[in-house]
Amino acid sequence: MINENDILDMTCLTRAQIAAIAEHEHIDEVSAAELGEYLMHLHHGPQKVQAMICEDIAEALHADDLNRARGLYAALKGFLADHPEALRGNG
Image (cartoon, rainbow, N blue to C red):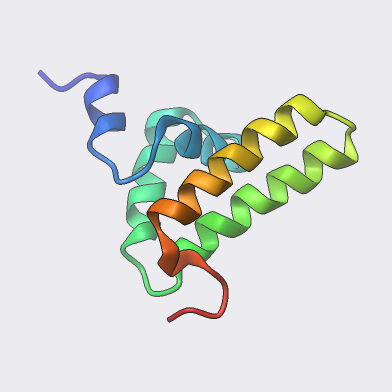
């Protein structure tokens, strides 16, 4: 039987990236994994995931939550390293 960990591991995203999508969309992590995987296969979908993470970073900075902003920045940095197609202006 497939469990929650299996679903999270079947995506092309890391747990931190999935958590960032979940936070941005106010949904659970399994739903965020499904949404993220779907977006990653759409034209300009990776850019949408990048934008979600960037918006969360801005929100964290606005709230003076530097620890959260640092964690999200690390997720963004890893995302862009793994998915260079997400860089704005690409494809």
